[in-house]
Length: 639
Image (spheres, one colour):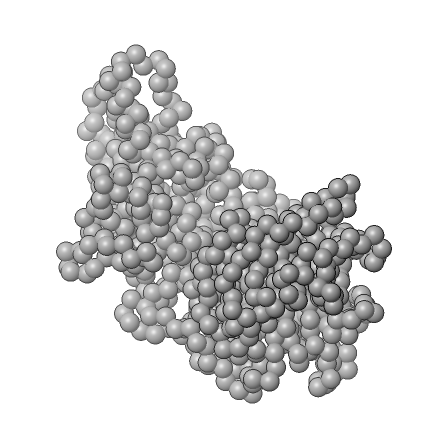
């Protein structure tokens, strides 16, 4: 993992999570929760510069030594404490810790179950509002220079979870001394009051060149040779002896009072991670170079993890040869495996993980069947779906689950049982009621355990894939839903109604929307996300519709002019308010239009076949486009 990190094959975030796990830190233990560093020192600028070293925190120093004055005070404390506690020398720089149960709960207090945990740790209620986590800037100021009893670091959620920054449950935390009612966390000016923008920029900062070049110093402090001993003393990084769990042998302590004191101390204040390194931690390789000095294939942006398709959207070329052709009609589902490209026509879906079987529907007698891929032989026919009207859409999230829906408006979840590698029975597991008209599209995500269904009633509902229960409903769209998709990278949901593309968080909060064609004539038929290797703001949404043009979109956080699609300006509908009440906008930007006629003949045509299916290859290097003529074309950098 160290070598992968050095070569930029994994992100800074992934490497830190790996080190935390190896050191005994876990999401299941508040006292040993994963610890992450403060990476920024600029929480006052209107814009965030990730190329200016002054923007960043000094990762070579612990939080207690971020300023010379603060460092001097802790050194003075260290030199003044010389008395012993029992057999243990209590000489240290810090009597508090950078990670504890109360620190974790205070950061996440706006979300359950952390709200109840915080109240439990506080004796049954919330703390005084001014002492609670209410401002990122104030917390940084407290931990880096103002409060001698505060040396806290961060938790992983600061780099991927915007929801913990908003008081969506409307808890009554009380008012601060200036009269301000405590609610959402106050964000830095450069976040424009938007938690998503804050998380995006904060994650970019973690993966930036500066942090990549200096992160090994922080690892030395937390997991490495500067954790204790003479190196820790020199680095102003020593803690009370009770914090060092791997140095304490509780079995050898016979006095029950001392033993309970130590356990209570650790329970309240946390524990030092297990030491992973006894020597200097190696630095990360220079951006874009591996150990041999050659260009790294993955070093495509600041974190080195931007897939090829996303790095050169303007250079995508269409293969002159049709990859596949179905004589039976429009393409309905495409899967790119490690070895080949698989595709089936409309009203069929491939079954994971081997993709060697298909589920088929849409027959006049309302029956359905299972068959081997590429053959209509050995079909197993079932008539159990006849009670649920005409099936219009289906999805197979797992090898044993099929989800169907259609004119009945009911989403049906079926369980598949196999006997000697052949489908034996199809049993109705659960019926999900919520729509009032025909369900036209389905999407699932095993990663986030959700089902998303879209209907002619202009609604889109999110269901729990594990519990098979209703979660939430997206606001009403302007037309019948024609396509939905879920990003396995970020959990975002794309919903398409007519020519409009809408982007939502997994919790149903609107991110952005746009009229993709600049008119009301075109209709989106299919959409998909380009999954990224790492949580990244630059994930692209791909749409295809009746006009035969594939469009690639990305979301930007900026105060920008109207987006232009074709010849007409398009106004994004999603507005946010920053801390000063100024309006900013998140908007979808058209990155590229892929026109098959221009690619083949050099000029546009009104007779393009409709795009009916989309897929991105496993390594995100190819975009596969299936059309109404039963053909599949490939777009890639090398054509």
